[in-house]
Image 1 (cartoon, rainbow, N blue to C red):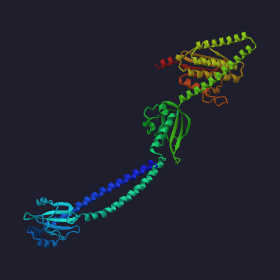
Image 2: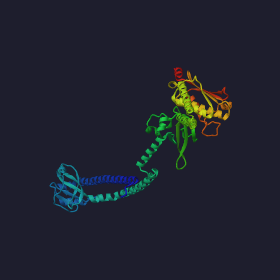
Image 3: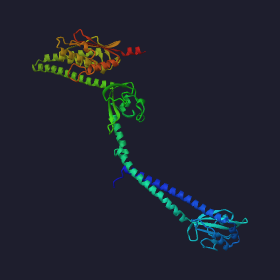
Length: 534
């Protein structure tokens, strides 16, 4: 058997609820009307009994138990249409008169006689002589303040309520029509609900929302979705972290953007621009942001989605990529130099000149050890030493003399920048110097490097290349600016500028005495910065 779907359950629940409500309403209505009708009939019977008992001649006839006189007097009484019978009994509960002529001389049944005898009126619902259910009213008869009998008035219960049922039937028809209308409305509502819920159950929607949030949280970039009322619809973990939002997501979702974002202009739905890779600042952090609108089925703008990548993170990623590219190039140069040396050794061994081969190996080893010793003495940064060694190999391969100033000195523990940042700066400057010399075709192929850590952290790189034109000095640090046709260039100097600027440093570009460009970088040392802040 096919299980009942979620929407079928909703329809059944609505129909069942409507049926229960209508049934309860009809039952309560019937009981209330029935109660009012019974009270009305009791009041009618009681008023007629009192009217009969108030006749002075009738009182006297009852007192004398004169049945003939009672009958004559009752002939003048015209009862209302609803009255079924009238009977009069004496003090011994024996009928003296009955409007239908039944039970005369017989005792009354189901009578609270003592209560009536004490002067109280009594109404009740009980069966009569013909086993009909009757509404009865009994009133005591007094003559000269003496109890002398009882006047009873009876009304047929079923007949009286039968008239009520006819009136009640119309309300039942109206209720059934309302129930039918509600059933039709429920069916339409369930169809509408199914369409709005895309034929999915709440469990499926909940799973989809969790899946959506899970996917968003795996995205490295921060993502913020905003509706047309400038309320936050969705925000992922990366955006919460990068925007320094400490409240829980449940509290953030649905909040106005001004509650958690400042400034809000970029996030405001009224901003009509769709933007790619836009540098902006929010909550004190610098971001590279993208902005795209959302549209509903009618093509109306329903919100905006903004992706954020923290600018520092983007720069770090570019540094890593740049560093990896440099490592690849440096490794290629080392391998090339090693292959050349290995070829020489192999040739000497082939010619059986073993002594020359041994001496060549010793000389190369001594040279490498000397370079490592001298560089390690100047630079107490192992990764930076490795970078310089690779650049020496690359320079040798290109036929360039790379001179490292012997007065250079760096201690890694006190540098104002990290080793990776130092490697990025020096590696890119040396690469640019090598390329400048190659493109200039100068006979003097020299590059000089000076790095010193004192009151300022100083980096100087100069070359004998073609230099930099005055009109280009202000442009060379712009992102993607390059003289080369290769689209992968134009990042190195921009990275250097970002690192130096974030460290409160300065870059000076000048003409080198070698004929090319001289890059001088000055970065305040950590200790000096702390003293100035104090």
